[in-house]
Length: 407
Image (cartoon, rainbow, N blue to C red; front, side, top):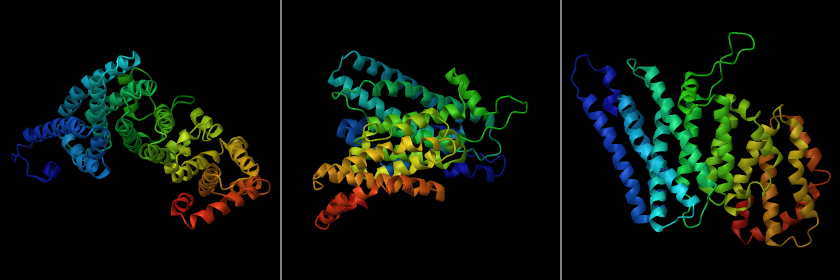
């Protein structure tokens, strides 16, 4: 990769043979990584994938791949396409077998291997499309076309993943790595291609999207634009928060992407105006997002409500405030009708609402919004909170686990 980056500084006419060797290195790298996935599963099962896709290990694998891949991008595309298309076909066939209840040990193993290989390919595509070519001799239009084709392959794969989520069977457990790979792809795609559309030159015309969206529309055979892509990302976040309610790694990855969407100028404007967002604001309690019930996710509740707070106090959504606060009022009422504050479920309810309120207030940007929260909570509701918190603090003196959940 370093040799490839030095090419622009070499004298013209210097023979390097890199045009021959770099594609071979890229091909062998992809082939060996896919073999490593299969070997890891054969030896250690799903735990093997956890190690293979560990943060440090994955970063090391993907660090130089974009540079190698873009040297002869057409060849890389064919390589990834030849690897991905058969795997996607196998994945669809496996899901069909699960739907028909034709489950065997061989099918379960094949499904895990297929999901693991697809996960690595999706991670690779995410890393590659976010890498901008720097050489002045690069055909940027060609690179953009290939970016669109690779991105389209991931968006098409999502329909199979959604079908898999809809047919969960204990005999063939889900592979979290594939969902985390898609979330990683979304993060990279957002960084590279979610920007403000240029205003139309003609009055009443549609805003001009980046060229990649026109190419994506062709590949997907349906209209694609910034708003639709961000909507797909948000829908995926909501689905994964529900499917992986007990997996803190996936929950954390979902919230990291959600945080990025509400932190970016363009993506925030879109997120704040989506129907999916308003559904979340109207239905955000533990019954709708059961990941909040897990003690391992208590700290992530603060992050979740910090994100929702930014969206809630946008001018387009302020009318949802009282509807949004209803679950808080219900929880306060539940605490007010409780006599045994030492009961574990009451303690955990107290921890949860403290974390939720902390996240809600944490992202408030102005005094009117801050006052609006406390006008609703402080007079009638807040006096019900000290009793369970007092019990929690007393217990925390002898048990650090409760204290760590509250902090």
